[in-house]
Image 1 (tube, protein in one colour):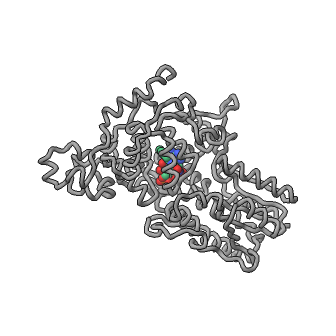
Image 2 (cartoon, rainbow, N blue to C red; image 1 turned 90 degrees about the vertical axis):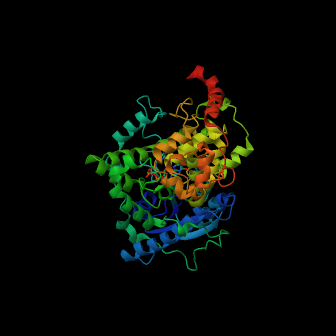
Image 3 (cartoon, helix red, strand yellow; image 1 turned 135 degrees about the vertical axis):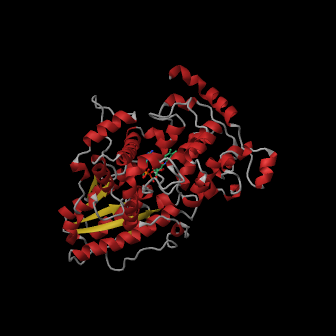
Length: 483
Ligand code: FAD
């Protein structure tokens, strides 16, 4: 008997739920990945770091599967790679390989759920079983519920319940290697497509400090483990190396969430505050997956429906300034440059620029959310939507609408020495530290002294924060009765 493991956002072969179940139950197990044209064709550009990241990680996975099989003395191993519409590719492949079952790890996005249902039906119509497993999250949508059996919509009580449920079983890795001798070799003549075969161009991925594949994830993890103890103090400062940078690996499953959580739980048990805080971030991740699953309407609507009555501005020029890092607020602009140049943005800055777009520029959170979706390497519908709705005050457990980030004080507080701003805005190089957070406040003589020509070298602020804040309070004011 044979099975096919369909890999998607789980590009590793250790501690892999579907692969483990397949290897335990079947004598011959094939592994496949599809470069899904239903997704790729909709991308606005042919130069996309995510596609390059996946491509590199798929190549590594192919080698890792071969090595895993070789270590167990099996003749097999390797990855079958297809390029086309995923449902048709998987059904066709399952039939041509003659497998009895297709196994995969569960996805929680509405479109992915619908796709998997279609695949399951098509397979079953030809007598092939389909099964899916929890792998991407620690605790799923129905595993953490209130005493009344309802999903939580506030994070703190959710986290409390989540921590109680997170036992040793949830953290135990799947021992894939034990059954690796069941790995089957891909059919003769299989070869992996190049990036060009997929119709994509090279990106600057190789120049970024972002190693790919499961090995890349372990490299980043080894770098982070000694820093975990200081996470709670360092994580809010984009100029410092305080966070793990593992999000893209979590997004594509080149690292196991169980491995990360087990490390954090272990360090937290020894009293590490940093590890406890980091574990909370992993809880946020599960929280947003859970919210998306229970409330798929959040993809296009505010979590709190009354917030869809907010009248946002069209503001095409302000929108362009935000997208192109030309707002005249250095922290916002440096953050947007980080996104455009690297595909990453620090969490504090995601909050700052999202607040700036919605509360200072009065632009609908959905537009910012879509922009992030195009540019973030770690773009994840659940976390991105949750983050945007949090910042726009339209979401579950969101920041209250009358609390509005001040982009200048955020800058003074979280980039006090301007290290981050200077990294991305070299045009402000000669501006003294005390003015770096808001060069528009400099007097003409001060500007002259540092040679900065506002309006030429660096833009004037596109809005005045104090008046923008007042406009936002008015914009949201009708909600006051409901708060
Ligand atoms: P670390 O600080 O090391 O955290 C570890 C992991 O915890 C992250 O990799 C991530 O998987 C998870 N995590 C941390 N914070 C959050 C959070 N607030 N919500 C959910 N998971 C979290 N994260 C994404 O993975 N994809 C997105 O598309 C995304 N969009 C965001 C948009 C906005 C407006 C905001 C405010 C936040 C968004 N986040 C998103 C959450 C967070 O900013 C990133 O996960 C984090 O910056 C990634 O860097 P890191 O891996 O170094 O994080």
